Length: 348
Ligand SMILES: [Cu+2]
Image 1 (cartoon, rainbow, N blue to C red):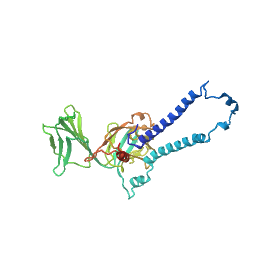
Image 2: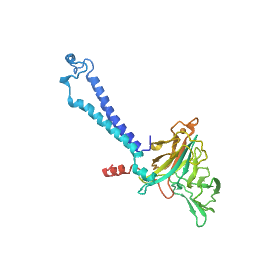
Image 3: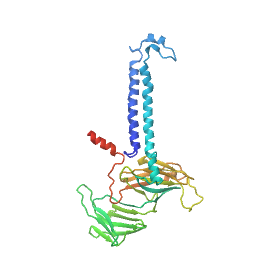
Image 4: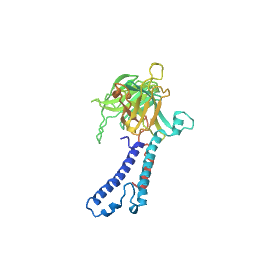
C-alpha cells in the first residue's frame, strides 16, 4: 500500500468503498431470495410456472423501472470507477503544463524540482546528482555549521538527558571528505571545531555517534555530478516543500558518455512502492525516460527493479532516503492540504 497521501491511496479507498457497497447489495439480495424463494415457501405461486416461456420475459409480472435500473446503476458505477482510475494516471503523467515547463524548460514555469539521473546497470543502480544537495537531520540538540570565512567547521552536539527518553550522549564524530574519513573525538565539551573549510564541489559528510556507535546526527553535502551506487549507497533526495515541488528522475539503461559504446543496456523498471510510481528504462531510447514523485515525510524506503533484467535481477534492490534540506523541515502533507482544510471547516 503506497503512502497515504498519494493519489493511489485515494484510489484504493474509493474502490474499496464501492466494492463494499456493491457487495452488500449483491449478497443481501442473494440471501434474501434464498430465504424467500426456498422450496415450499409461500412466495412461490406454482401456477405461474406454466406461463413462463424460456427466453421471454414474463410480460405481466415485469417492472420496467427496476429492469432499467439493473442496467443504468452499474453503468454509472463503471463509468465513475473508470474516471477516477484514469484521473490517478493523469495526476502522475498527464500534467502537460508540468512536463512542458519543468522538463522542456519553457519560461513560464512555477515548479520547483530536484533532479537526479538514474542509470540501470547489470545489476545495480547508479544515481548521478544534477543539483547539489545539503541536508541535515532535524535534531533539537545537534547542529553542524561551516564558517567559511575562517575555514572552520563546528559541530554543536549537546549532551542531553531526555525527559521523554531522547537521550543523546555524543562521543565522537566522523568527518568524511571526498571518501576519506577522519574521527573527531569530543573532549567533554559540546562543541568541536575542526580546521576545515566547506567546499561545495566535493562530497562531505559529518556523522555524530555515541560511545556505543549509535548514529545520532547526520549532515551531508552532495555536490553536482556526485554518484551514488547501490547497494552500498542510498539515493538521497529532499522532501517536497509544497504542491509544486517535485523530485524528477531521468532514467537511462546505459551510460550517457562513450565509456561503453557497444553496450545499449537492458530493460529495467525503476519502482518506488512507497509512492506507487514505476517507470521503465528502455534500451535504445536516447533521451531516456522520466518520472516524478512528491515525497513529504522523512525516512528510508525501498527501491526495486520491476522488470526481469538478467540473472541477478533480484539483487537490484536499493534504498531511498528522504531528508530535509538544511534549514528546512518536512512538515507539510503534500496533496492532503485541500482535504484537510475542508475537514477543518466542517469541524471534524
Ligand atoms: Cu532489473
